[in-house]
Amino acid sequence: MNTLSKIAALQINGRALWSENQPVIERLVRDAAALGACVVVMPENLYAMTAAPRSLVDMGFDPEDAPVVWLRDLARRHDVWLVAGTLPIRAPNRDIGLPAKLYSRCFVIDSAGEIKAQYDKIHLFDVTVPQFSEAHQESYRESDLFEAGSAPVVVDTPAGRLGLAICFDLRFPELFRRLVDLGATWVCLPAAFTEATGRAHWAPLLRARAIENQIYLAASAQVGLHASGRQTYGHSMIIDPWGQVLANANTVPDCLITAEIDPQVQSHIRKQFPVLALRRLKG
Image 1: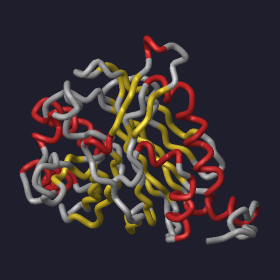
Image 2: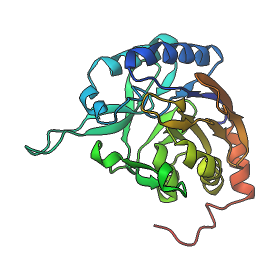
Image 3: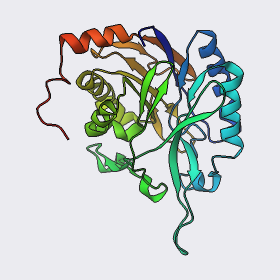
Image 4: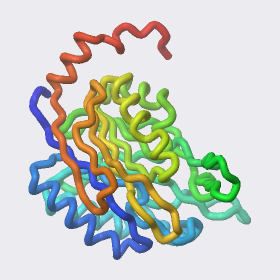
């Protein structure tokens, strides 16, 4: 594959209800398709940024249910591949007495509306964000709501072989190297980075993952203030294998960015600067 492929990444100020997010998603996917994007990447928590985290469990659904059907139809109507952010998919029944949980699942849907791959977020966000002031500390425990995935996933798309990662996965370089070992030439990252962690680490981590793996990276982020009071960082980006930022949405809500994936540029970088070929420690 040696032709240029245009991809898009959406940036959304997610609302608390799916019905409020659908018109925004529809408009942005339509616009991305009109601009010639063949693959559109969407943010984490695409379904809803709820006021209370636990309420997302009550909203959970199965892969055959209406939200996934709607996204499949959206891809078909606009003749575009979708990387459908993350959706709250019900995990299998747990032992009696244990609370229900979800998978944070990303579906890759082709332009015919068929699901070509799915990935369950491996690294769950169980942290206290250092704010250097007890009064302002934020704590998150995604493992209270979600079951962790276990398997890296790649899938062939019109823009090349795509590796799937989600938000907190960005901090685990071994996952990205595994995706590259599986043949990924680009990686997508649906995300909802907090304002504090985004300001400190978002751009350096994105550029590092792209540079060290010599891949294109498309990060699609939530942005702004949400119903829970949580503030997300935005700055959706598309980055090339040399670490150059090709597009940056900054803090604009409900927008999209586009850039072209150029396999010849990537091949040239890998031949002239053969980091992957010169690895000494593997496995």
